[in-house]
Image (cartoon, rainbow, N blue to C red; front, side, top):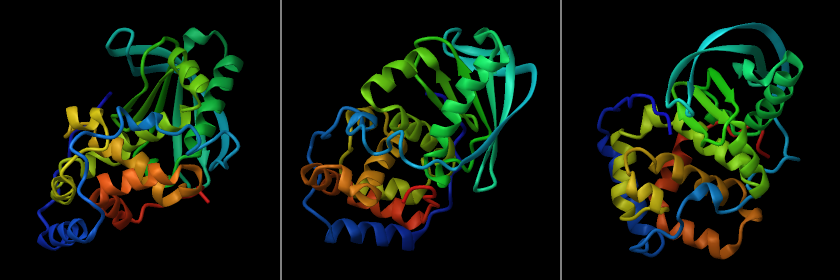
Length: 259
């Protein structure tokens, strides 16, 4: 995944005390082994295509050159792209940059509109730092960070087949909008320590890089989509990461357009 630089927050003794106390009063200790391999795949129905989107309109702007990361080259590349401005009803505007390899503006617009609508289904609090979206062909994983969401349409076909496109976008948007502020901040690290375990193998193997993004989806599931997951899954999430759940809740992120 692509990453931005972390922004370390000052230590907060009160936040640390609150989080530790939540752990003391919460459910049973976390399992020794993470319950999931990766959380973007735990349930395909956390966000579905029929859910509302905050996308208001999409306008073609120009064809121009942009510096875009392309996983096929594993590098930033100067790329000819069709450019679109996606406006959301929370007043944010994102430039969607579609690689000119798609051939013409009409084809590029179909891709831009499809992914912009899906990104609009995410909570507004996950779009706060998203300034651009890069769209390429290729069967490479999506990415987050760099004030951006990276999309490769070949891999998107796999995500769509498995019903997890929106959940993958949520993971990447968490990287983009939450990691730079929280991933290395003391309150998050205190919550991580207090829970005593990780929600997924991916988070455990990359605790500074993946834990925020891996944990946000399960938080979203138990606090904002409990009717869409099993009670067993909810209990597993609540038992594994009670302090992380409380951490996210205290952020009071704007969840629009989630109902």
